Length: 368
Image 1 (tube, rainbow, N blue to C red):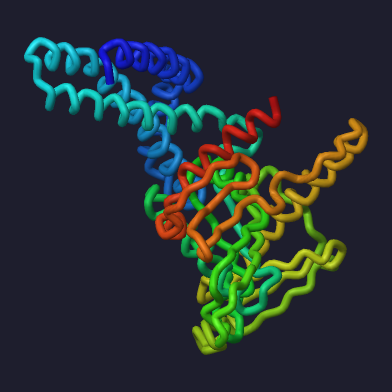
Image 2 (image 1 turned 90 degrees about the vertical axis):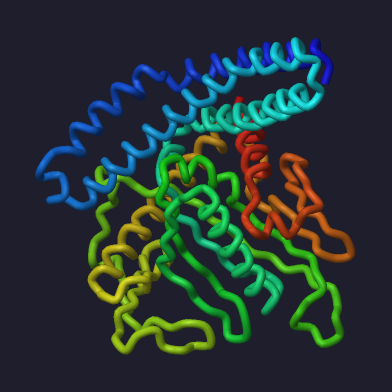
């Protein structure tokens, strides 16, 4: 790029980076680190394991955020020097390296800017995600399992902890449903834009005649609730079923009836957990998931009432939100943001950052 273009890009990035530093409030984050370090060093911290994990997780996250911004600031401050040296020496390779660093800085600052848009009431929470096969028969079940892998790979790429609570396998292939937790700060705010119906078009591997098949899977994303928000659920409102955990094809995972299914009778909400070998642990986890789902249900009902009072007749942006086409051409396209790519293999392998960032920006524009 020309020297003038580089100067204009750097001036724009300087403004954006300064704005990010202001929004994140680095002095307050450094004070939070000092406080969290004091809590983490308390000798009785691990007497309460849940609280200990919250403290250490929060400390690690805040430290990482501060390092991330400080490293970006150092890299940005070095950029003019790289261009000056390249210009003084008339070195085309050095100039190309400076341009490459500028492009890298642009991407890093854009990504960090998206983080500052996560300012919703529950955005900083961990996430509970449920994937369900919808229309499309065995292809839909296979598609639901492909989505589970896509989100698993996304979490791996970001070093986010993912814990699968329950998987209901389909008879022939794939899964009927799966529920998992993404245990990372801002997981809910980040992944909530993935909620909705995901549509797949491909040549069905289950059709002997090799015909094209369209199948659908639904993704539900809700925030993990805090203890103070827990909903009191009377025992009379619950039906508890225990059963033996099973894997693909119905094979037994263990020899005891440790899996737990909870049905909230008044609403019909059903949750299951089979990831632990202990029935008590599975019941506790299932109860936490049920409370989160009931709280989200209450929030949705309250929002619907407010929309009705305001005369809001717009549909939910979450439905039919993304299309994945593998035949007759290769393309993934978000129907809300118009973000698209022809690299379908990378998307299905978890490279969905561009779609998530576009979704967060789109959501912010819709609420402005």
